[in-house]
Length: 216
Length: 222
Image 1 (tube, chains in turn blue, orange):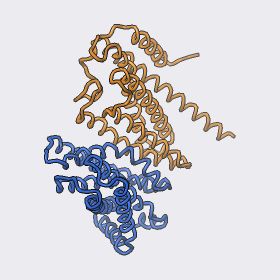
Image 2: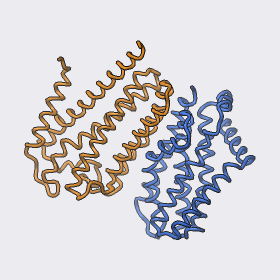
Image 3: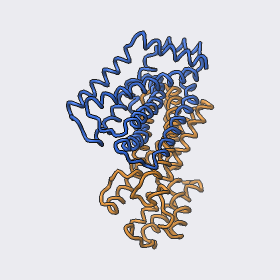
Image 4: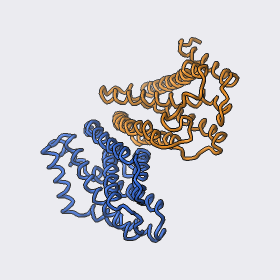
């Protein structure tokens, strides 16, 4: 547990010192949403929701991709000598969840500013955006580990990840649609539980499977 | 030509189902009518696909535990044959849907689930082909196979139960409505159609594994 926190701190510190990724991704979010605004103006609820989750998906791929792809071979060898694989993957998951949670909030604010804000129940939508971002970042963190081991770029990650994430994105859109009106759906709680279960499953799988990716 | 008993059984079962499936009596149901015969051809594809993907993931786990490349070639061949059954299941379903729903594709949850399975296993093959070193390919492929399997199957088993669908069975059971078929059809399905098609898949997989082994042998002696 101690080394998880140490590794997490290292990632965080690196981010604060370099500030390259965060601002890079921030600019990515801002310019994509601006382009969307130029192309669509202020779309209807359904379109707004669909666009929001698609942008989340692409932001996630770009934000998370660097977590393994940036580490050089030498540095990985160094981590290998000081920490276990489980600590390493847990620290990466934790960092990416934090990063994606933050980015979800940013993209929600930018969406509200540029594309209009059709959301009725803001608090619920915000919670769902962060929750969805969390799920996305967990899946893509593990896939970026696979893509990095296969010595491939972020494109492979997208090929591997998009089919896997479709069910989750569909459910998130369905959930988020409920925030556009004041109507309460009864199946809401069940879907949230299902998604939380999936998130737990991903973490468990990452912990079990990552040691096999770690060693050559 | 000598054939193992299960290959003879497979041929007999498939001959039986080809005759009985087209000529046998079926209950006349509204909407379904004669298209209910697809039960013998479409449904076994999905049963077979699930079995092959399960065999594939079991072999991936075995590979990670033992490091024996034999398990890896089993995993990839069974994934291939599962993919073939998935394509056949989708196309038989689309032909059927064209006559009962009016169009081949209508974004039904079951169709989406099948399409997702198809994309995921294609991604698995792409991932494998992106690496040349056989050990690395086997290891990373196995990790993705297990991860994808564990992500895919809960969703295709659970989500269709949450969403409404036009597919027979409708809400609840994702694929079958037990009330639609009579006992004769059920008997033919479980004892003839389903084992017959699955054995055919096993047969194809065993042939392609033998072919692959021969090719490897040839490379070694070249």
